[in-house]
Image 1: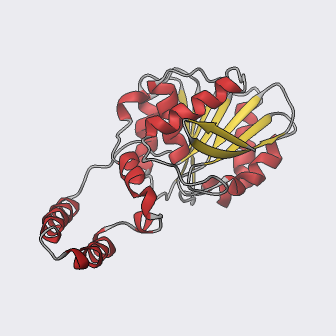
Image 2: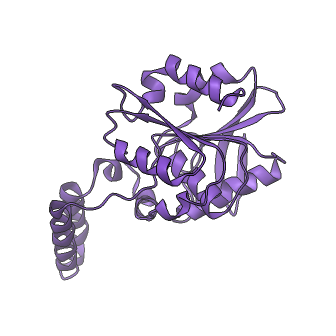
Length: 255
């Protein structure tokens, strides 16, 4: 099924048929399919909606560059149009970033929140990263004086040597959207989240470091933290049985 808001089209699926509703928000570049095991575990007790973001899965590339606020408004409108009242929300990585924006900035009311290895806290740049960024900016300016025919080749050379693998894996039409998202620090919104929140994190997460989990736990007043030993950024795929036990306890009446 598809939902369109301001010319941005997203694909979504609905599983189960219960009054209690869960919205699942995958990570950046991910899609609904990696959550099918979690959905199977929950669909008997909930109605579950899961989404492909613009440019991923079955959703077409957006017609314009997006910010995290654009994404949030899409799903706020989805909730309104489908008359979903106070849903439970689960977000992994970028999905957590989205939930933080909806709850902490737009003050959307959720019944419960589960953040799995959530993004949203902008890391401080190391000295090496600062030097690398400065060098890239200088070299980028040099490219503007090159003959027009050589500029694209020069730009590709710079990207290959300076851009992250996540950035390079994206189609060019999503590059600015990616930059908009990763440059937005959502730390300031965490203190505004009043909804009961469970934070689940892999002990060995290298994409969103474990220190971010402790910071979120400190700033979100009504929150609890579960750290999964030996797990990485994709703890919900590595330890699905453990995640099932945790979510069953939390979503079906536990605290």
